Length: 245
Image (cartoon, rainbow, N blue to C red; front, side):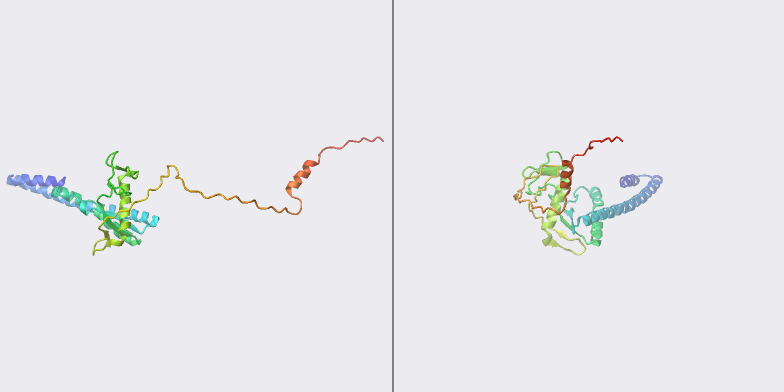
């Protein structure tokens, strides 16, 4: 917004009279100062958001016992060809700062951050690697062959983890960059059972009938014998005798 205002005033000041040009140049200088201050504030906010995200992700990975965090490499999917202004807006997101902060924070707790290819992570089935259908819109996906579906972000997470595990033997390390997996390999992912669905049939162990252990009677009177004795003896009053003197 400030950039557009400054560009418009610069265009007006080109053919303006000297007095009006002086006023427009003063306004342009104020707008440039505001734009510089807004940019510095945005950089600070992006840095704080990046390290906050990195700390939460590192805590989750530590609690889960993970040793590797896979992030998608979006360098091949960056916005290009939309003009200098739009390309600059897309490049100024907090994504790069968040990934850099995650690499530093995870390294402090002994966790490695690996970048994996991002193309097709949310559009291919993790089971058969076939293109996913989108019957309910852009945010959901479904594979009719494997009967796997759900949110595209969840499916992308499964594919990214699969690519990181399959490519752990082909990781490239360049100076000044985080480890990266350049080639996306495929292997079928076993579908986990939904906790809300029925339990699948499993082979049961054959039951073996065993004889009951023999009970050795204890010496002395048992509580059962006491109960039987008290039940066999009647409780009452004897005949009343009267004596006369």
